[in-house]
Image (cartoon, rainbow, N blue to C red; front, side, top):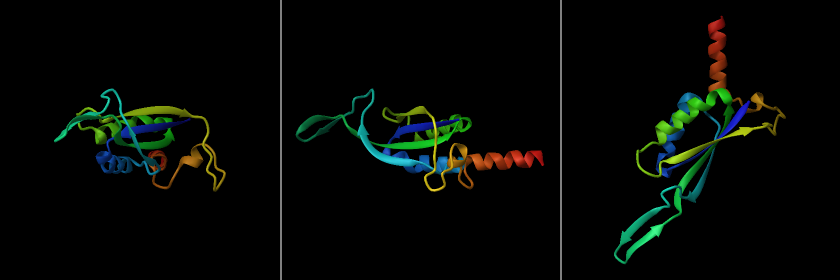
Amino acid sequence: MTKKIEAFIREEKLSDVKEALHSIGIVGMNVVEVHGHGRGGGVTLTGRSGSYQVDMLPRVQLNIVLSDHNVDKTVETIKRAAHTGSRGDGIIFIYPVEQVVRIRTGERGMEALMYEGDIDARRLAEIAELSA
């Protein structure tokens, strides 16, 4: 069926992640600016007036809904493009999606998710090419 990937990444890695996702055929996504922290609890900054804790760090949340068979490739692409090796690189959540409905056309399921040239359209073209 379908899954939703919700990835929280560093703001400065957004362009790298978008380019990497586009290169594998992920064309539909939502991006939201968020603030939060994970295990690290934030960062301690030191200035002239002393040190202070910043516990709500700016991050970007990516939301992508896609076919089950595209999840692993997409997650690996996000991990590779968002990785810096430092604390705070981010986290990815994967959720089941019960149904998808495109408002304009009423399409449901896979038909509602597909775009021309996207990862599923590329896959179908490859299958058709191999069977020809």
